[in-house]
Length: 104
Image (cartoon, rainbow, N blue to C red; front, side, top):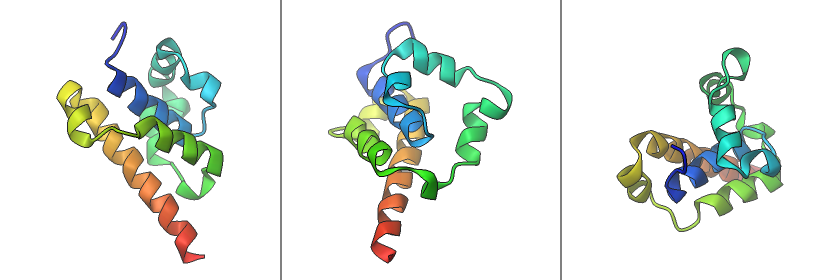
């Protein structure tokens, strides 16, 4: 995408926020594209696979949740099946992280 649908950008921003990137690194679509295009140890697939939900700081969690406000899986799937997969992953991780807090 040169300029992606808003839902796609918001989902990918939330994804990279959970993965530990800063808000500054995720503000622009070009930056997100660069992050998505990385290979090897820094590849998106590897980072998702090795993700540890216990490593997410509260501010990153809050920022990721904020990005997804007002979005549903159907909203995202209507514009991008790929982004919908990340939406499901991010919302699942948010639920898992919030659940961890309740167990303490």
